[in-house]
Image 1: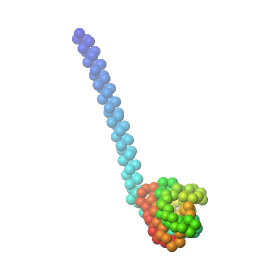
Image 2 (image 1 turned 120 degrees about the vertical axis):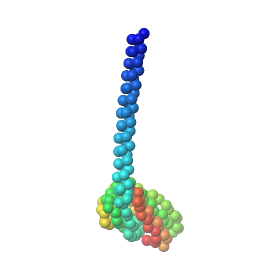
Image 3 (image 1 turned 30 degrees about the vertical axis):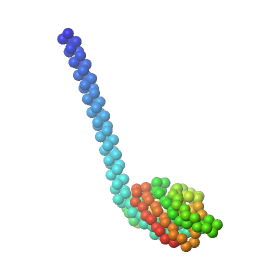
Image 4 (image 1 turned 135 degrees about the vertical axis):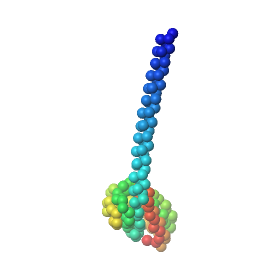
Length: 163
């Protein structure tokens, strides 16, 4: 009976030690994942703080909307697929004004309807870029247009007026 108790105690001790070792490894792995996520968040936060864009000018030619934008921050802007571009304007549909609010998708080539592209590539710090947006219909003359852009890091700019 004494030997069986010693064997049982030994088995219980081995199971307890292996459980503690497994828990320690899992804890260490979760700490590594947490640290990596925190570092990623901090670097993204720094890029967000270093991003500043401003709309310089807006012009319309038929269905083409051209936007001049400047990068006043210290971050290169190039990941246009993750930018958001929204245009709120009055369309000229057979002489009638019809309100249109649309989000536009980025295109690496000439844009089609409801798409936009960068005409200058990477927007460097202190640089000026030009974007082309293809509206679904021409703007109704004399009406206000609202252009909103947000970068992949979060900060954005807006412009409102009669182009």
